Amino acid sequence: MHTSKEWITHFRLNAGEQRVDWTLSPNISPEQVAVILRSLQAWQLGETSDGSNLLRAAERYAHKTDDPDYVAAIRLFIREEQKHGANLGRYLDAIGQKRIKADWGDSLFRKVRHFNTSMESWTLAVIVVESTAQIFYQSLKDATSCTLLQQICTDILIDEAYHITFQTERMKQIFDQKSTLHKTLARPFYKLFFYATAAVVWMVHRKLFKAGGNTFKSYMRKMQLKYCKTLFKITLPKETLVLKPASL
Image (cartoon, rainbow, N blue to C red; front, top):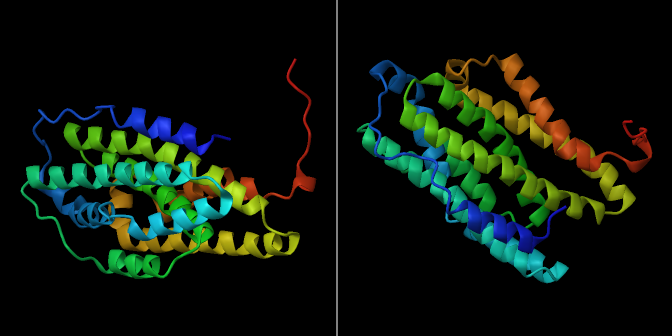
């Protein structure tokens, strides 16, 4: 379990990493553009949020838990997400495609976020979205032969792995503070929200997922693995844990 101060250090160091060679020219075929464009535009828009609602929730939570460094960590997390949006937008510019200003899925999510004041709800939502993002960007990477786009996706995938750890650690802290009754009620809700959101993301971006080599069955199997590593793991009742002897 990392402290907020340790996450601040991570995000600051990671901001200095340059994993994309922008001297490369896009080498993507019109056919590949036709397959990925709609999803690429929608995801680019989603990555450009200013994060103001999340930041307000984080400020209230940090005050309540006496963890002021958490706000700074969230600011850096948001900045990293915005970097993803900027890189995707730069790529859209490079291939002569427009950046969209509205998407029904993004608009719905933004409306929900506006009324979301709970750090628990925010963290839950981010864990699910980041989990689907890992499959999305791997699919985007696999769907084309463009080296520049593949580098952009690799950079995002590296960031997202840390993001999931960052959010999962916080979710565990939030969950552990719940009463036994509230834990019992939360477990099925977390699971329902996770898989329902995953199904919606598949329906909206199935063309891209399929181009990246996924079927609905394989996609959901990957999401199941991610659920087990995140929400299931942190909500597993302690009495169900089995102690195993250390390896000799």
